[in-house]
Length: 215
Ligand code: SF4
Ligand code: SF4
Image 1 (spheres, rainbow, N blue to C red):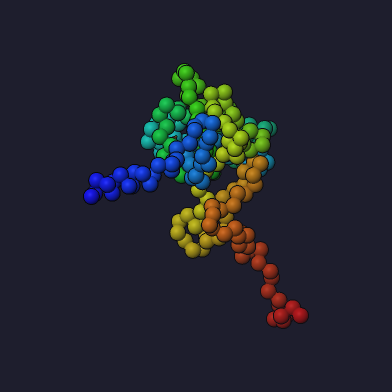
Image 2 (spheres, rainbow, N blue to C red):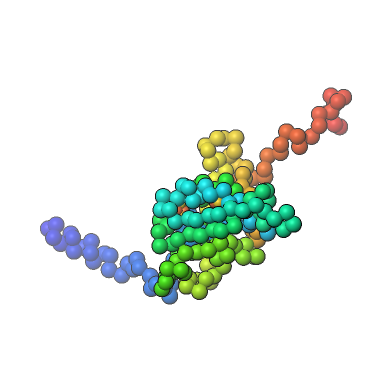
């Protein structure tokens, strides 16, 4: 009897297609998909990387190489003293764990959702700073060995944006991250609500010295 029950289950599944014709058809990627990295810029075009090497230090695969340098006074690349002069990621070794993203103090490095690339030589597998830094529209640069579709240009970031990252209720509903070139301050991940930043104490309306209610 159980023999026929097994066949019944099989028969019920006939016609239920769970695969797609890749690469002609591509499924939407999840919000937190980890693809290849981008180096982000502020809304004014300045680079966010300050060359601190924390990402390289935390990387378990040892695939990031960073060299920082002092910002030229007449043409600074990033706000502050230092910027990422050399930046390389070896995608023959990266395991897309995102620890570099977690370690970065300036949100300079995030992972995009781009993952379809193949190399025929080692040099292409090592992404350089000029390839990783976002273009003037804030989106990743398309490299010759990457397979993009019509939505790839929006796959710029899959960084998780939580309004209470440390679990403190004081941060619930307020954005704590900086704006990005071409995108501004991105909203929190759904289903978190988009809220206006809470005013600082110094921005609160001054108390009425007469003690009146203002009417
Ligand atoms: S995602 Fe992980 S393995 Fe890849 S560069 Fe970042 S820290 Fe290294
Ligand atoms: S990407 Fe972030 S952690 Fe890495 S060197 Fe630049 S600022 Fe530092």
